Image (tube, rainbow, N blue to C red):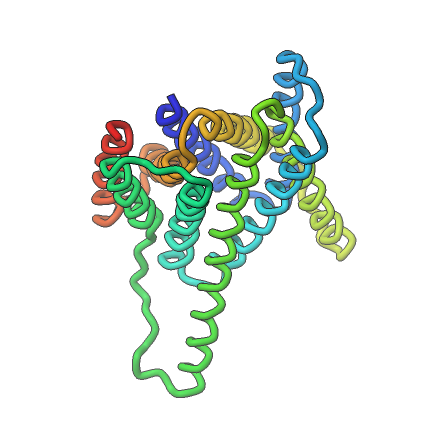
Length: 295
């Protein structure tokens, strides 16, 4: 069951990321993050009230707050990394590190998957790297002057630092959710969303006061952000449930295949082309899923 939930997590989050990507082309990232985190609370609170869950101890809420902090730090590092670095480096580094964090955490807490499942994990993480890879045709001139070369080294170090920070921060979000008690229900998700929404909202307010008032949302913008909020909330809730039913070290790499859903939607709706590496990545991902399921 945990394996199936992991697949649903990847589908939900990947589909939501596709909508958020379109929305981010029309409005600021801070606007998308703020509204999506806060709007996502609506279905979440309805579910919590309907499930008649008691309010958990403060520790579970604190874990949710830490998860929200990790989410915001991860998004900021990722967006900044994509802006100043090469997508072909930043995206796969972030995705693979995020998956690896969950695997390492699982082994630390004593999880010991079978050999077949471990091979599947390796294939799945490899697939994440290949699917998230964006081909670039303009590489740095190897004959660049020394000053330019030094600037290039500095920019490469910056992109790796930002990509690594994004991967570790987003991966830590999974750990905090996995560490929450089962009796907490989905309260940690609510705490995390409030934290992320408040931080993103504070940044947005700062931008507005600096003279950068965002344009009002259109009906189409609202639909995109609301759809992203719903899918992202659903994916996070399914992720917590998957962690409670199975090994974190197996669920994390399965859930990390979410770029596959994003790429597929981009191919079907935006007619984006997939490079050979991404096609191979889909094959590796499928093989990895089969082995994890069998293991």
